[in-house]
Structure formats: structure tokens, C-alpha cells
Amino acid sequence: MTTLLLAVPIAWAPLWTTPLSEIAPGLRVPVQGRDQYDPASVDYAFSFRPQPGFLKTLPNLKAVFSLGAGVDGFLADADYPRSVPLVRFVDRTLSREMAQYVVMHTLIHHRQQRFFERAQREMKWRQSIPPRRTEDTRIGILGLGEIGTLAGERLRDLDFQVAGWSQSRKNVKGIESFAGAAELNAFLARSDILICLLPLTGETRGILNKTLFAALPAGAFVINVARGGHLIERDLIEALDSGHLSGATLDVFQTEPLPETDPLWKHPKVTVTPHIAAISDPRVAAQYVYDRIVRHERGETLDNVVDFARGY
Ligand code: NAP
Image (tube, rainbow, N blue to C red; front, side, top):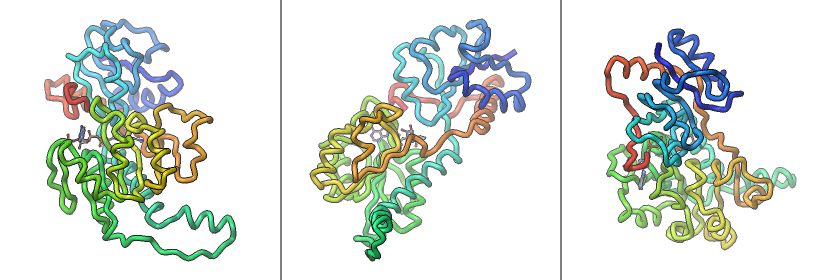
């Protein structure tokens, strides 16, 4: 019998074991820390942030599945057995929720919604129009991958000027493509609203820093919806306090949950959300993993496999 080990917090395990028992009654699904299993019998593992060193204790692993789109939690494990393919979760529903979050926070900023909320609290009839026409507002998306491309297409369809930055050159209708380190500054110089949708890798860690902020136009707005490790928080606060940046929306943080003492909570120019831009649907994820196990057992090639050299 094929065995899929679920390495997640025990209280959350039924989110995946329940749909898996319906979809795949023939699959054995022990939960790490809850159920007895022989490590040598484990064929596949399903996790998000496994304890470092844990996966290497499973000698016969054929593949590991990530519960989320980001795989930095696995790559942080120096002992991850690199010969075992790591499959990330790529799902249109997840990308759609992410794009929705990005569009919402872009529009909240563009339409000055926080200004009107303050006016309402003071019961003041303050009329104002967006300072810049939509078609003159330049959106820059760092990371034009699965999620960045969909978010860019949605914003393009709202008539914003959209560009994306990626490793390789892209050809997406109506979205200007900038590629590689050599084109980063030109991309930043034309980004009034900068949205980070990069994976967290050795190259992108800390990319949202004072040098990058200085390269943005005065008054730029930043949305980080990728990983907290992309942002140097004190650099953001300095750029906001100096007036160079007009505001930021942050969904992800270096430390999660964000500590109560963190100045971001109360910063007047910052919107904080608790890493909820999109959450993988457990039922969809269970089906996704099972489909791939079936195909892999038939000898077919796995898709969405992480390239360890690139880090995503
Ligand atoms: P993806 O499909 O792997 O796309 C990554 C993009 O970043 C690609 O376009 C890639 O370029 C580009 N890139 C990577 N390294 C780069 C570098 N050094 N320089 C320039 N471009 C680089 O990733 P995704 O699925 O869209 O996910 C994006 C992010 O969203 C991840 O950080 C993920 O963790 C995060 N996320 C957050 C939430 C949440 O709730 N907040 C939910 C889901 C995902 P190429 O295309 O040329 O390779």
C-alpha cells in the first residue's frame, strides 16, 4: 500500500486526512507525531514547514509535496534530501485569491480609501479624486510567475500601466517585461505601485530595502504579499517616515504572528493583514497531491517540481 505521511500540526491534520480518505481510500495517510508508522514505509510526504532534518529520516521518499505555493520552508532545511523531488502547489484558485488581494489593495490606495475612512470617522464631507489617472498609474510586479502574471493581467484589464520583473523575458499581452538584475532599476523607476510576488531565495531575501526604495519614484506605494523575508522593515519605516514612500500594505512578515510590539501595527501609512492573502484549499490540495501520486506511480513525470539550484 502506498503511504503518504502528513507532516503538519496535529490539530490541522483532519483538514487533509478527511478529503484524502474520501478521494483515496487505498492510500495510507499517517500523521507525524500522532500515528505509528515505519519511516522506511513512507513513499511520499506532504508538509509546509517540516522540522529541519525530519525529511531526511525517511529513507525511501519518492517525492515531497508542499501545502503552499512557496517552498522556502523546505529549502531552509539544510538537510533536505536533494535527490527527492519537491513539488509545489500551483492552483488557479489560489492564484485568483492572491490576484484579488493585490487588486483590492491597489485600488484602496489608488482611490484613497483610507482618506475617506478617516473623513467618515470625523464626519467630514471631504471630496477628493485620485491624484493620478488610472492609465497614467504605473504598476510594477516583482516576480511575473504564476501569481504575478494573473495579478498583472487583472490590473491591466482595469487600465493600469503594468510591467513585471522576472529572471527570464516574458511575453504577456499588455504587460511590459523587464528581466534580470540589469533591468531592475529601469523597472523600479517606472513603478508607482510596487507589488512583491517573488519567491524567497538567496537572491531575493531582503530585496525590499533602502536601495530599492530609493530607486522608486517619490510617493510610490509598496505591497508585499510574497514573504516577510523579502522586506527590511526598518528601511521601509524610514522611507515612509521621510515621505519618499506614501504607504505600504503588508501581508507577510519576518516574524509571524507579527509581535504586538512591532511598530508596523500602528504605523499610520501601513496596512497589516495576517498572512491571509490566499490560503491553499485543503480539499483542492488533497486532490492535487493524490493525482500526482497516481501519475508518479504510473511512471509519469511530476510537474511543478522545484529547481533546487534556482531556489524556486
Ligand atoms: P512562481 O510562479 O515561482 O514565480 C516566481 C517569479 O519570480 C518568476 O517570474 C521568476 O522569474 C521570478 N524570480 C525569481 N527569482 C528572481 C530573481 N532573482 N530575479 C528576478 N525574478 C525572479 O511563484 P508564485 O507561485 O507566483 O508565488 C509568488 C510568491 O507568492 C511566493 O513568494 C509565494 O510564497 C507567495 N505566496 C504568498 C501567499 C500569501 O498568502 N501571502 C500565498 C501564496 C503564495 P522566471 O519566471 O523568469 O523564473
